[in-house]
Amino acid sequence: MAHHDPIGLIAPHAGLAQLNERSRDIFRQIVESYLATGEPVGSRNISRLIALPLSPASVRNVMSDLEQLGLIYAPHTSAGRLPTELGLRFFVDALMQVGDLTEAERQSIQTQLASVGRAQTVEAALGEALTRLSGLTRAAAVVLTPKSNARLKHIEFVRLEPEKALVVLVGEDGQVENRVLALPPGVPSSALMEATNFLNARIRGRTLAEARLELETALTQNRAELDQLTQKVVAAGIASWSGGENEDRQLIVRGHANLLEDLHALDDLERIKSLFDDLETKRGVIDLLGRAERGEGVRIFIGSENKLFSLSGSSTIIAPYSDAHGRIVGVLGVIGPTRLNYARVIPTVDYAARIVSRILGG
Image (cartoon, rainbow, N blue to C red; front, top):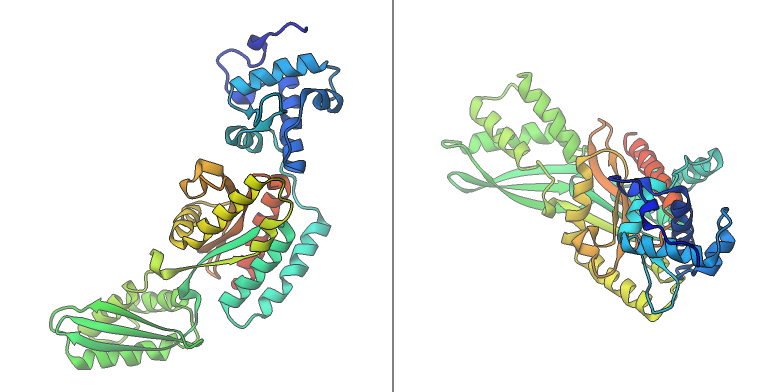
């Protein structure tokens, strides 16, 4: 039996990133085998796979230390080992090399997403992008987008009470939204009519985000040529379109069927059913994806790192996308089992988000 030296596993007072070369190599093989097959891998197989000449007994000693660190576990007695969620997080953060996409891969994604730009509405474009992204990654693709991407056709203010009005927004797609607006004291009906005419002359064919920018600029530069009360009505109307709240968001999911491929056991199927249930609770998914809008670049959530997917043990890889003004307006990405091919999916999601930003930016 090889001498077991757990002290040599990690340098003193160092974190997981300081695993020695032997331990890293063995751990990497366990993770990569899991990502490829979903099956536990034993010491005998690992001893054949690693570059260093180590006996199965020596490999078992290292695996024991990795298990003590919480990086791997044995699903059954005398079985091989699988990575834990902590192990997957460590692998993704410290060991995995996320290469850039090749020119051929970039061209493939661009070709796949080319039809997105020909879609009639933003929602249709995003739905098409998700279908393509789902096909590229073999996972379920999701997007969180503000409803304000719909283009406007008409707006009207209808007084409800002396200091309350109903704002009726009609989109080019026929969608109608009603919002209650608090009015400044003393607003006459003529001010509501003037605000309606002023807005309708400027919003047609624009998204809410575009209309908001145009109107805010007009008001701040005193180009509105409106009296004070009417300006307040317009400003209040703009404020009511601020977006970002859950009820102003919509979630689009494509590619559920991909999650049913390559199932290895009954508990795999149970996890996928649980994930389907999670995706039905859209508010939770919206909350999760909304967190990614507060930062740039790809965000990765593994398993129970987000409470929403704690039961299904799913991973989420998402990236924000922007509008024509460079402002983040939504998030797209993929949701799938923790066995996602992270090294391939991460750059694919990142590039897809950039392509969608370019398309939406015109």
